[in-house]
Image 1 (cartoon, rainbow, N blue to C red):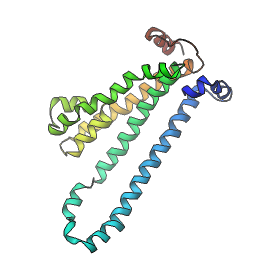
Image 2: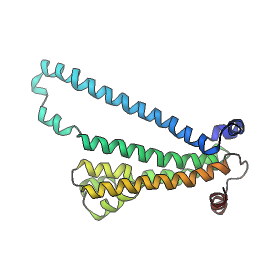
Image 3: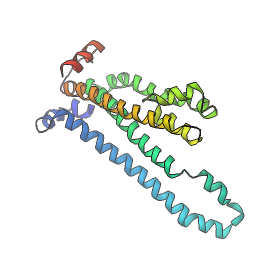
Image 4: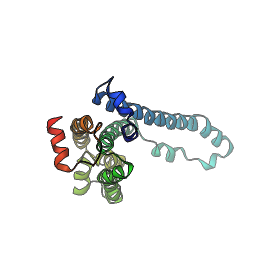
Length: 213
């Protein structure tokens, strides 16, 4: 976004499509790359367990414990939760970064403006170990329900097997509700900021963009 804005390419793109379509296209395009990466991991995992593991058992049967491997593999429910959290977390943060790119005019401004977004990613990682050790604590429950934290913390809790179904459902509803809210705000900032040049807008100016876009 920032590269196209500084090179003025975006002015040509906007002449043939609307700003929200451009933002959505970027999000879906990069998201497809992420899904391709996940597909490669899945393919390698399938090959490892269908071809590599039998070969290892044939050579050194004492080196493989089938029960340990079975316990380490995620089930269907946990795998489905991972995919849902991947989608929710990706769309949430990609919308934030699209807004950051649209409201900045230089790489230096973008580095400063993305600091709050980075902190939203750092904080759940800081809470990760205490939450894994005590997955049913108040901190764990509340933190995993926050949309910006749940893509990381909810899966860590669910992997321990101590999360009620209602908490998972509530966290997913809040996450995708947060995606819609953030995408709406980011889209309005993107709509105005993508053609703006000069000084980075202040918070009051951003609020005016959201109200008037």
